[in-house]
Image (cartoon, rainbow, N blue to C red; front, side, top):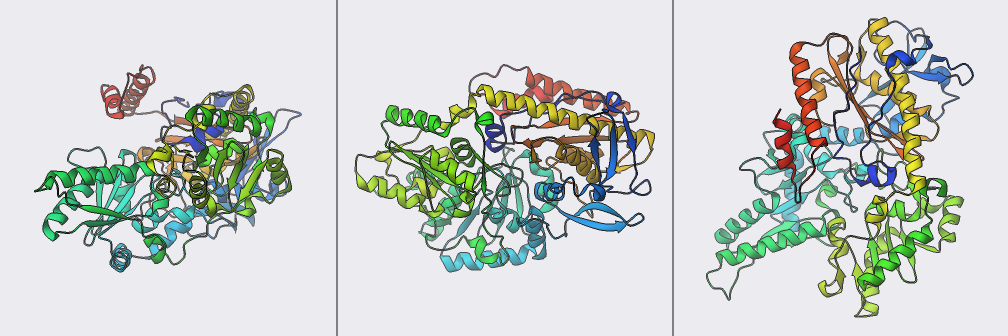
Length: 615
C-alpha cells in the first residue's frame, strides 16, 4: 500500500552535504515494507502515545527484529539522546507516562542536553522580543554608528548555507529561520529577501506590520543590489550626500561587495551633471572595530562553537593530506601565486581529512580557515578543536601548523607585505569580504580554488563509502517502513510527525558508523508536505498526525563515518483520491522532465521551470 516514488532533488543542500559526504544527491532504494515485517512489537503504553520512543533491536543471529522501549535501551545506545538533541534542533524531555515508562518527546521550549546551543534556542530568544522592539533597537544602533542602511545576511564568515547558532542573526532579527534569506533595515522600513522555497514560511513568520517580504525572482521585485542602488540614487539627489550602507565584512562575500560598489559607481555616472564630477551615491561602511549591530542587541547570543575535530581515516578519504597539499602546490605554480587561502568549511575538512560534530547542526565540518604556500600549510582554528591526541598527531605528521582562528587576515597581509611580487590565490565567490579586501587587485588571483575539482572527482575509497552508506541507510529505511505500515494499517492508529522523525532517526542510530542525521528530518503530513524544509515539533500549531486518509512526505538522511544519504519518499497508506493521484502524477512527470533534461549552456532555474509546469 506504500507508494514509493523518488521525485525530488535536494538542490539546496550545498557542499557541506555533498562534497564531503560523497553524495551530491542520492536516493536510497529500499525493499518493500512487506519484505521487512519479521518483528515482534512491545508497546510503550496505550495506542495513540504521540511520541513513543521505540527503536529497533536487530538480532543478527535470527534475522528477526523487536521493538523496545527507548528507556530500556539507554545503556546500549548511550548517544541516541544526544543524536536527537543535536541533529534536530530540538531538545529531549523524558516524561513519566504510560505506567511509569520513559517517553521521548521534543519541544520548542525544552532545555538542550548537549553543550551546543540549538536552533530552538535562537527561535525562543527571537520570539521573546516583539519585531518592533528589535527594529527600534537596531535603528538606534544604526544611528549611533552613522549608517542609513544595515544588511543582515544568513551567512557566517565561511559563507555556509547552514550556520552555527551564534551566526543566526537574521533569524533572531526577523523570526524567519529558513536557510536562505537576507534582511535589510533602513531608518523607517525593513525588508526580507528570500527565494521561492521559503515564500510560505516567511509569510507565516514575519510580522507584516514591520517587515515586507521581497519574493526573489518575482515580477517587479528588485534584487538587493538594484534596491540599494535606487535608494542611494534618491538619497543622493535629495540630500546631496552618500547613502551609508552598513555591513559586517566577515559575513558577506567578496563578490557581493564588489557587485554593490560597481553598481553604485555606474549609477553615480548616470546622474552626474558633469562627467568630470561623478557623485559618490553610496559608501559601504564595514564598521571596523565595532561589533555586528545585531550582536549589540542580542543579549543572549550563543557563544562561538569550539567542538573538537576527529580524524577522517585514509580508508574513507582515500588520499592523504600530503598528496592533497602537493596538488594545491602544483596549482600555485600554474597560477603563479604564492599563497592559497581557503575559507569554505567543506574545503578545510576535505584538505586536512578531519570532520567535526556540533559546530553546525547536521554538517560534519568545523569552524576554521586554511592557507597553503610552497613551504607552509596552516590551519586557523580554536585550540580546543585540535586538542584530541590523535588529531594533533595526524596534523603534525602532515606538517600542518595550527594558529589562532583570528590570525588569518593578518597573516595574509604579512605575506603580501613580505614581498610586493607575492600573489594570493582566492576564490572571491567563496570568500568573505574581510579576507578579500586586504589583497590588492594586482596581487589577487581570483579563480576557482584547487580543492573544488579535487572534491568533485571521487576516488575508489570515497565511492565505496558512498555505497556502504546507502546499504546501511537502506536497511534503516526498510525497517522504518515496516514499522510505519504496522502502526497505521495493523494497529490502526495515527502517528504524529514528531514520532515519525524520532523513530526513523532511531533506526539510523543503530547502523554502524552513524553520527547524526544529514539534515533536519522533514516529515510533512497532508498540506505540511508542501512546506519546504518543514520541521515538526511538539506544541506547534502545524503539527499533524498520519493516518490512512492523508499522504506523508518524508525527506531525511544520515551522516555516517563513510558517507551521507538523502532520501525523499511520499507514502499514502490508504486509498488516495483521484485528485491526489492526478496532482501527484503531474509533479512526478515534471520531476522526470527535469531529470532527463540535457542542460544547455547557461541554463537557468527559470528555464527549467518551464519543464515542470508543462505538465
